Image (cartoon, rainbow, N blue to C red):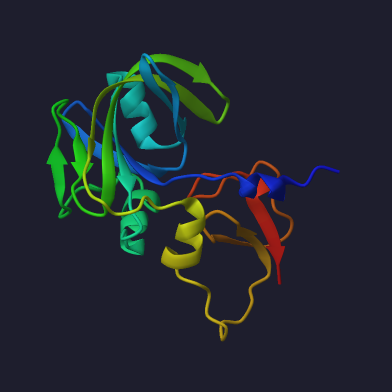
Length: 203
């Protein structure tokens, strides 16, 4: 029997993926940015189709990646990961700079900026894989980039011991709790957009 928990042994970074379309700026948290070739310099990003940023990149063909550092506060993940850009202005009141491609990137709590232009897409079902040329890149600070493991251990608030355990299923990615039985096999986490396979039974 396959143990899907083995997938959590893979190492990931954490990024704010930003885009602009029809005059609107938006961004979301992703953990899937990978350099695939150096000549030409190309990266891939995988983006959930339910994210508004996904639609903006599909339409514009451009994006920025802000490489989050270990100094990034949990509030930053809440802003870009726990709400939708369809109903909220995620860049309102936050320190951001517009790069040469006209898109915003974070100027604090980031290690680097990478700007991409899409050259090819692949439909992955729930996600789209974008292959992109790197058109600009710069180191923004000496702060160490945050990994997914660092986020779970040092940034994400830990559950309080005195809280009464709830019965249901907890998302192993973001901590969202689905109360009730059973967990529908096609359930999608409303916060991080991961499927039922990433939930664990609690209570």
